[in-house]
Image (cartoon, rainbow, N blue to C red; front, top):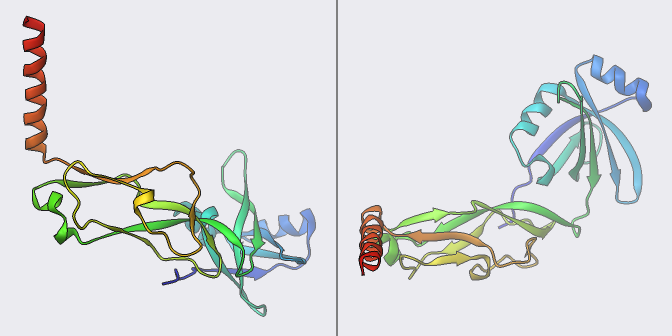
Amino acid sequence: MAKEIPNLVAEARAGSGKGAARQARRDGKVPGIVYGDGKEPVSIQFDFNKLLTALRAGRFKSTLWNLQVEGQDDVRVICRGVQRDVVKDLPIHIDFMRLRRTSKVNLFIPVEFINEDKCPGLRKGGTLVTVRAEVELMVTAGDIPDHITVDLEGREIGDTIHISDVKLPSGAKATIDRDFVIANLAAPSALRAEDDAAEDDAAEAAAEA
C-alpha cells in the first residue's frame, strides 16, 4: 500500500529577489522557491506559524510533500534547504525540489510488528525492544510504502531482528549498507536478575579459587 503523501499549502509570491523576500517576511510569511524537473523556478511563500509547526514536528526534510499552490497544479517536492535567522533560529527562507514519480528519494518509513500472539518469546514473558521505530529507505517517489513489516512469528527470547530479516517493498533499499538491528526480544526482568546473580556467584567462586 502506498503511503499517503501529506499536503503542504503555499501561496504564489509576486516578484523575486531580496526586496520581495523581505516584504514577505514583513507580512508574516516565509519566502521560498521551487526548482528542478527541467522547469522554471517558482517563487512561493508560507504562513510563518504553520510552517514552523511543520518544521518542529520533525522529519520535514525527509518527507515527500504534495505542494499545493492556488491556481497551479499540485507538485511533489522534497525540502532541500531551510535558511534560519542566526540569532533567533527561525526560518527565513526555504527551498524545495520537484520530483517525478520515478525519482528516487530517501525517506523514513515506520516499522510495523505483526503476529505478537504467535511469538514464543513474548508468550514466555519476554519484551520486544524496538531499536528503530523507523527505517530510512531509498524509495520511488510514485510508490512510497506506508510501513515495513516485521513478522514476530516463531521468535524466541534472545532473538535479534536485523534489516536483512525484513522483506522490503519492491524497489526499496535501506540507505545504510550494514545489517543493522531493528528490534530484539529481551528476557523478563526477573530472569535477567537471576542470570546476573548467577554470573556474580560464578565470578566470586573464580576469585576464591
